[in-house]
Length: 309
Image (tube, rainbow, N blue to C red; front, side):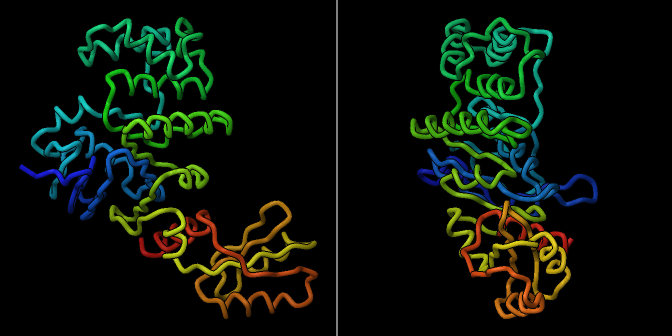
């Protein structure tokens, strides 16, 4: 049986998983500290969802191993499932049952005692008490998200695994959701959350980036940005859309994107970027080199993944 490293909620090594001839997870090693909010980044098909399902025991790894909450990933999967809250990408509850009825169903699946009290406590915590008798199918995206989170918390898990939990909800609902996540982490809960929103990734204590089923880079958001060694320039002025269209086709330019009234270009070679900007001639734009952002790095990594796939 694998020995759990002290202070780690997740400690897995060399995980491998294939579906037929397709290798989805290819030698993945991952450690997440107890009480940490770990952001899980990567393009579509990078292996994020499969990894989450391996960690909570819904899938069995073909190779490798380790521990989740101190329990052996391969031998003690049923016990792990009882200690983990897993929020899937899609809303998967009964739309013709009320919020409270759905939560009661989940509570009985876990064999909880004091079901009514557990439901009332989680409804109050997540801010759903006023909607307990509303049909789940009538909830907006943000309220469905809250209900799914409430179902994950009913059995008081030590680890939350959240798979793109805020996809499709508005900015206010996303911010409120993340405020709740930070409150729970402060109380000692560990959170592994996959997201495509860079503002959410920046709210994580640490981020890890997957490509081709392997962990490519990890660290704080600032550390990941520095490790990429990406060079970025920003311009202000008129005609930035036309300038962006021209720059995208020039050597050394990986991305050229308009953000409001600013144009940002990024690449790996400072001299090549400067030469591309010089080729614009007297475009009326004012340029300066700026620090790259996490979304710049994310796009850079996605392009690298596409080039090697």
